[in-house]
Image 1 (cartoon, rainbow, N blue to C red):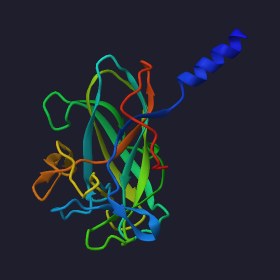
Image 2: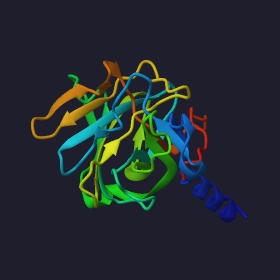
Image 3: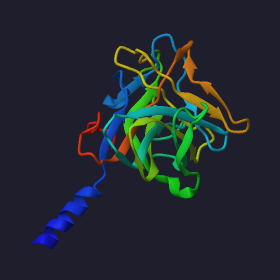
Length: 235
């Protein structure tokens, strides 16, 4: 009986679940009844380049609250390649996790995987990225891409994920920014884009406004206190 109980506890402790969600996707009905993610009012950018071949990365942050410790198993990011079908064309990814903003003094790398093992899987979210003038457009189906987190253990603090992706099409990959219902750009965003060849960083902006990016962290809150996340229907 004690052995069975020990195994049950061990299995539970290794269980990976949603521990953090930072997503704002859908704004309108889209083609075939699928949801659409429309460019925010006043903006013009479908997505920002996050490409292995083109040499650009995207970074956004999250906070682990005081008193909590998280194990990061994987991170789900979102991107598209223009002209793809709803079968994902993504086949590669790279990831770094920083403590502190990557372009700030004192930022520390806490996890890196720039090999083929970083890419775990991919699929369609069921959402199309569109412009307000063409809500039924199907050229930009948004895919989820799962990147390895390495079981990294992190305590309280501010952390940044940095990622870049590869696919079989010439387009992109592009990462669509967050947008709220009503086609509103969420406030207080601070995401960054890095040019790999020069190792220079710049804010990601559209129409002069800072934007943020969608991601989900899978793992476990080792303190047993739920994070801000909830299960989401993005597969």
